[in-house]
Image (cartoon, rainbow, N blue to C red; front, side, top):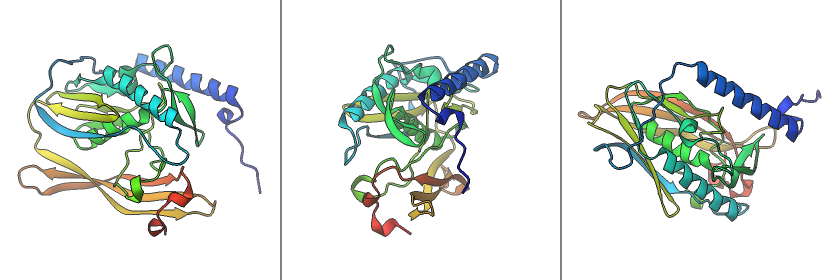
Length: 278
């Protein structure tokens, strides 16, 4: 069998670092010469009156093999990032960029070591855990008429479902300063405001606007299951659909496939519910 050739970034830590710096430079240049109009206005003393969508959840994962120190650091990283995003107003035609708001995830900027995914492995890294915040923002946006312009899906099977009960759909949104970004654009005729804050270990997020939009949105998941493939690894599989619903009549206007999920399981296979394996 022919040996798989490694990528330059996979040779050793030095080549990985060189590859990261190259991608960061490419993103800086792209931002410099691009024609995007980025959201800049922060309004922290007043919220727009209408909630479009809201979401929240515990920032701390608990269970076998999960480092509690990295989880605590993750929560601190999210709190810091929330303070930089909270209240941002995205006007018609403007784009929200996760990294333009949060900035560089360095220890000098107050970020700590959290859990990050590198070359398919979970390791400690400065700023780790911010994918949790990006996931939450993505769920808000999927329940709104905003246009997602950049998203990078990663495994949504990083940890077992709480008590084995599957919560349909995990956003699985990867972010890595600054070249793996999460972005959305406001293509509507009214401003929206993104509010993010933490209460203890609970993350809260809201997307707000001035008047109700004519449609609402929901996500549905079909054919969720786990499957062991020929390489001996287990994967979570499902199809995620986004439905647009007319607010007045309740009629489903459209149903589009949002994500054909095929995610490698990154936790102990013994924790996969047997009834969910096919």
